[in-house]
Length: 262
Image (cartoon, rainbow, N blue to C red; front, side, top):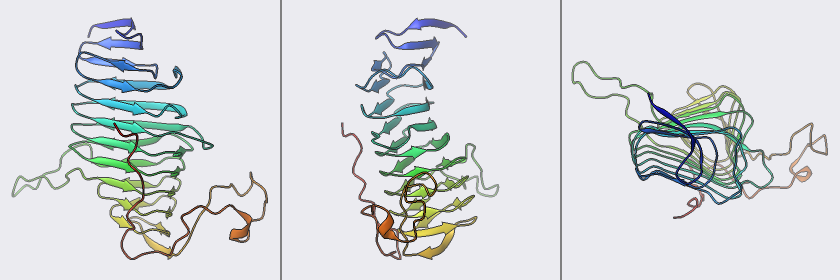
């Protein structure tokens, strides 16, 4: 495969393989196939790997985004990835795959302790609200990666489906969200859980598959050992977010605003 090392047509650093753009600097970019990066913040040169293998794909990153490690692969055509801004939370660390007509939309102030894997293909969308906190070892899979068919009918049995996470959700260590998962605002997903369907707002969900184990809860970001006071026996010891609500039976529609409108 022929690689041409050096600057792209608009000065973006990276490599070009026949049919593949590999971008290693986060800055404005576009190519003759309609692929583009929309970003007017300072260039990011460390930990960035963006691949355009198809056409008419768009990566839009807010100027205020903090990027730790970011790998985005646009494998097909008409993909979209949007990443919001960050205020006081840690930088985003993600490996993202965007397939045909698919989208991954990440809100503002979304934090990740370690790299979070995301995959959306076949027109599916992963939507992540604002102020979502991921731990380590998390995966969001709107697809299974490979098709499974019913032998008798020949029909697909594992279609790609959307994943939606509301605002102010805490996704615990090694928790995984699969196709069709929906999580309401203010909820906590427990360690090692696998979410496959709807989870309401302001609850703790745990297990595989995840189920609600406690309702009517709220959580806050201050770490127990890193932020004073070092004993937090009640809600008066923290600044309360707007997400202190009673649990509703059905998933609470997220108030997440549309990211970075065109």
